[in-house]
Length: 265
Picture 1 (cartoon, rainbow, N blue to C red):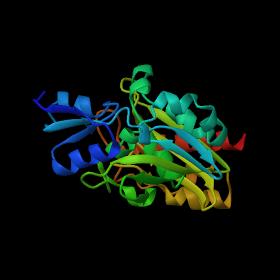
Picture 2: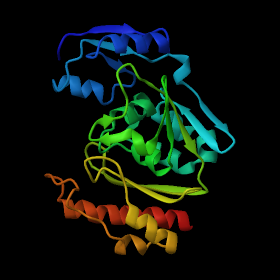
Picture 3: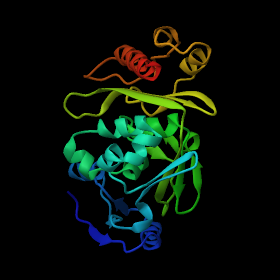
Picture 4: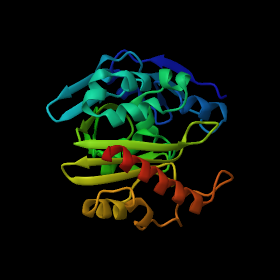
């Protein structure tokens, strides 16, 4: 691991200033993606800016048709929150499937979304629900936030403060986890929203994506059989020692079928 300086930011403003002054600095919260990256020498930041304990990044609030969750909220807090379970049960279920107990007790919502790991769970809920990512500088629609593998619309000195989730009439998440890491080999989040039925897929491709063909088919007939017939291009899906692109395409169909079945009960 490379040498770096460590600073604990006393406020959101201080953290943003430190990050904007040094483009090689990295924010540190749960560290579930950052620390393994450092150990593997895939990153060499000059500074780690610890943003844990900043009050602006905490809290779970339900107001009107929106569920707001602070960026520093840990996975286990989302999974166990009565507020989340009442407003969007599928989001609590998703959080409860992330990694293992150790990861769920350290990892944070904001860290997961900001890193945009292609196998992370939260991006599917953010995109599937049409959430808004609120930063210290602006508000970013989910459709404009995820730019590709480990890439987002966040700029230097920009930090996620909270994520605002529109509350759907119904939603579900189904995931096929890698047996060792717990990451999604394929995860499908389906939501009935005011904008229509939205289907987001994580794990199977180089980044989270909307499955438009399934959305259209489900809007015509909402039943599990749609998952077997909706068009799904597999050319761009992941292929590695764990499975071919065709295999991952089949996993997407099976997970979609399970999510639809959950919503139909």
